[in-house]
Image (cartoon, rainbow, N blue to C red):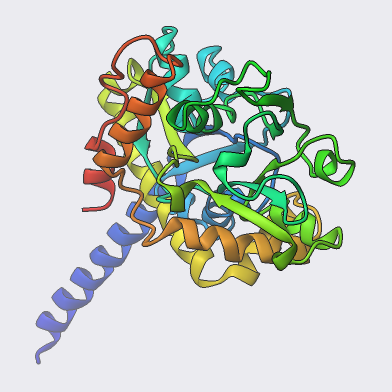
Length: 332
């Protein structure tokens, strides 16, 4: 190779290196798109996928700066997003469709939880052994949108929720298991990944409990979906931001289900309480995530919407309550 050719090659290499440096410098200088995510509840492994996506840099890789806002007993995600306090929320479909029915244009853009974790449990030595024994009994139920699956179930089996000997008395349950321990209710609501294990920690054994699992009974309504406002999705830039957000979030969920102990540790670092509890919760949540593709099953949506309509929780058929456009682009 003569000296002239070597000089030309050296110049070409130098130009390529300078171009690469300029590209990455420009990329690094670009401001990340901000996204605010409002959770349905406090920081715990129920939301591990989002914390993992942030901790592992999955959001950053998509050019996003994501703020994760914990929820709580006095925080309604539907109200937060309606008031402009979030771009996207984690919500149960019952609450989301009820809000949509009232004029808040919530639309499901992804469904990380394929199965429901809600159950009702009763002590085996108590008066309730089967559904037929509910009549005249006191049942503990959470509110703030969590009551809709219960009301749909009672409607399905023909029991009034107004009390009396031919119906059930509804106890507005605190977000713990004290109503069962203190015998204020014959049965209470629990989640497979949380309050059920609080009962076990309180001294109950699995064989001491009769469990009515909503999913196994075919009474489950979709839980923990991602929702935004359909008006905002009309903006192409916002839609693209949601595609990137969902793609990174589901990458976070996949990592969390494959590395549950590490995911639990990340949750604790972000404010989750009791690492052993978070590890156990993560193991149970992983069973609800399935393959971490985030794609909503239309039949599950239809079943949820019908149950809400039958119970008159919503006043009209729930049209336009979900879109597959985001997950189709995010996870082909």
